[in-house]
Amino acid sequence: MGDYELTIVDDRLVNAPAQRRALGDLASYIRRWPEEAQALQLILDNLTANPDAMFDRKADLHITSSMLVVDRDLERGLIARHSEFGILVPGGHVDGGGTLQSAIREVEEEVAVTQITALLARPIHVDLHRIPARPFKNEGEHQHLDFMHLGVTERPMAIPDRISIIETRWETLDELAKLNNRIGIAARRTLKIVRD
Image (cartoon, rainbow, N blue to C red; front, side):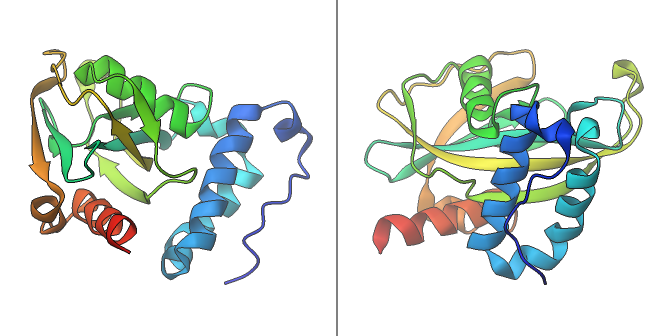
């Protein structure tokens, strides 16, 4: 699979802290979850070679971040019903800053959950998924490379923004772990962390 240490040799990255952080997050994730290396290494190589495309909304690949927020007892996770995409965790496009900072900001904006503390320095899950064309947003079909982080809140009250998030609810991590999607993967990893 190759060496997953990220070597910054491109001068554009030296002056681009957001790109460096996103690439560092991806390299760190690949080191932690090597079974996913094959699927993500090509993306890491392409982004390292072309970092300017990382935050270009007209590019075929958009960098996004999200967060599985858990309550202080580490028993329940927050999920939301999105107006277009169904059940997911709060998140959105990374427009500068790190993926973790972006995920926290998106949670605060979309569901008004505050006082969030990251439980891990690196993402708990990274995945690539297709987004269909959305003519009303002047967007063609593209992909999202999403960095899902894990955070805990002392204030588990969520208020949907009613713009993109229709409703929110807290589910046990055991229930979320049964899902056969990215939320389920993150919940299973969270349970492993908190129970080990």
